[in-house]
Length: 206
Length: 206
DNA sequence: CGTACTTGTTGACACCCGGCCAACAACAGG
DNA sequence: CCTGTTGTTGGCCGGGTGTCAACAAGTACG
Image (cartoon, rainbow over all chains, first blue to last red; front, side, top):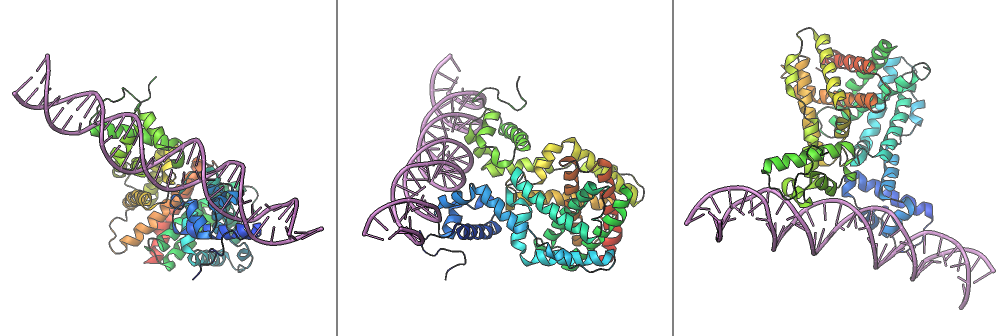
């Protein structure tokens, strides 16, 4: 049996894009299984059936490869935002939360590994990638709750919603990792809190 | 000038506890300044005026030392919980949030470094330390909001409050690190959300 | 005061990991 | 079949970590 993305024949020449994607796929898998420090470039090279030096050739550094992997994992399809129902705030929030929980549960393991930075921690580059992902997510949420028109307090709004993303991540962890909350409970919590954020917190701030 | 915890005389014999604390203090300082991967055991040993091998002697491994350091940083004095005002929910929540923001802002740099796992992040052991800290914090919050008596849904409650801790951390980061929110805004957000969690989310779950 | 014992401390050694780079060889074009 | 391009390899080097036997500071005892 040969794993997908595994070795074919050593030394075989591939198109740069193809080889790059192959290594990246292997890296995504391994970084999803173990924390950053416990995955060596040798592991990745072996799993990809490739010389270790090739990783540096394509990604420069191990961290560079990791950043690419995280970017793949946290990048969410923006299409979903456009097919939200028309109804009132509660309806749209409900749909958004449902969508979020679906996405997260689908590839929960990798997602969990990615959102906490895989363990590199306060590293500037990775922090930036995660922050960018949060920004994208925050903008999607703003669209979903119908506050994307706000010009006045745009920066504060995004900051608040990014903070809400922290709540969403922590809540998802309770559900998927510690299994202390059910999906239904998580759903109620995230919906209620988001509605509160929009209807009460935002108003009290302005 | 000699830094506190710095070298005195090489080879000087100290009581194990004293030496241990000295090294730990140095480690806390350095891990607060730079991420985990950028602090070598050599750095710590030099800063403590000690042979590198001694670190392994006392803490086993670099990660072991780091875990101890994180534990020091995230452990919060439990005394404060007892001197909360008597008033209604809103009053007690307000006081709790004020206390939290005070503590966090006092040593913001080290705290920020600690709560995100500082670097090794997310390996099982460090996850456990952070989780323990969250548990302690969650229990304090439950006392503060007067829900520590609940027996029926105790586990769900704690899980919800731990999720809230994720919100608190993310919000504090927006305030202290990205400076996108003011203290007043953070205060309103955390207070409102905690009240909602207790009054609405918890009720809808039961 | 000298000696032997305990044990905190040291320094060197072995091993692993990541980045670099010159040589190699697979494929295409002539 | 030869030749140029370039994807790929494997070894080298610097740096970091854990281990361990030897060392020596301090202490108890004669």
